[in-house]
Amino acid sequence: MARNSIFLLATAAAACLAAGSADAATAKRSVFGQLPDGRSVGAVTLSNGRGVSATVLAYGATLQSVVMPDRNGKRADVALGYDNMADYLAQPQYFGMAVGRFANRLALGRFQLDGKTYQTPVNNGKNALHGGTTGFDKLLWDIVSVKEGPTASVTLKLVSPDGDQGYPGKMTVLATYSLDERNHLKIEYTATTDKATVVNITNHAYWNLSGEGSPGGAMGHLLTIPAQTYLPTDAGAIPTGEFRPVAGTVFDFRRARAVGDRVRDARDQQIVFGRGYDHNWVISREVIPGEQLMARVQDPASGRSFELWSNQPGVQFYSGNFLDGTSHGKSKRVYRMGDTIVLEPQIFPDAPNQKGFPNARLNPGETYRNVMTFRLSSGQPARKKK
Image (cartoon, rainbow, N blue to C red; front, side, top):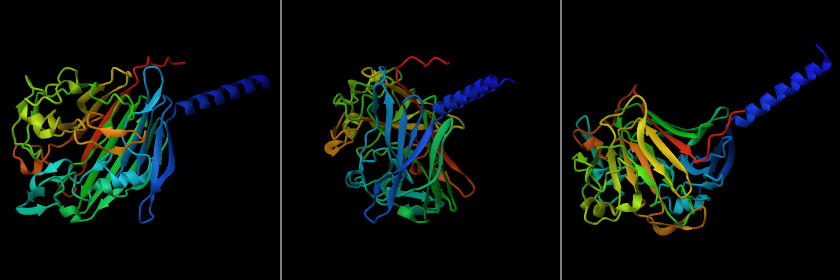
């Protein structure tokens, strides 16, 4: 073969490799800050070739940032949170954090298992919320794996000892965050135990698709939740056990509707109880093997949107009702009521205490799994393949 031909083939091969590497998602490690005891808090930023990135902190297995372009290619961080550890410690607000052992609420902080009553810390009125006073969101996880390639990922590990926050069993938890070139941001939690226990882990990301510092807030976002029923609650946000039809109520999001349309409708007692939306929509009655559509969110102002898919039976929709202006976010703007929305795929609240709710029990030899995928879209035309 002629020398020039060999040179041209080598050049073409190098170009192909370069093109492939440009399309590969990357994972970059850094140090976000320190805890008061001196322990370092690591961070991993996942990025793809389409201008999307996600940063995950070891503290609380926290989704600290999600950056994505709008319809005009302008990038913005659409996840509320802080840019320093001091604020996460002082005003945590569950921003992007992994919450457990039992996400959402347990009535009076109690549950029974095999005839024995267990008491967990009460930290939300007379009830327990998101695992107690020192839940998974307030612990430093270990970063055990960081990968690059067509899908970039980071896996974190936490070992919760027997008796932690009153829960039985030594529980080993893995949290994997991944990002691919389709703009699919996936979060997967798995857990095993050495003793029968209960578990319900989810992510508490706060979203404003106009940008976390946008003054317009999130009440103009169009929301779709394909659920026929939701779970009404008492004044303490504990489900009553009723599966109430959404038809004809302010809870009907089967067709896209602006979040703020009826979020302050005091004619509905449930809205009064929650100071807005803070309820579980019933997508199915049990955990499923695959994933199903939980919600769709669209921001008309920026063109950004996402679909949320999960294997969980319910999705808790919270309209940021308790943000009171005491938190200053990454943009240094004060976060207030109406600035954000939260969508948390999970087992129903208070499930261990409610007949007819999905089973939250985890036995030795079994693996708990909650997988959620945010299918992000910028509203831009799809890239042409070269």
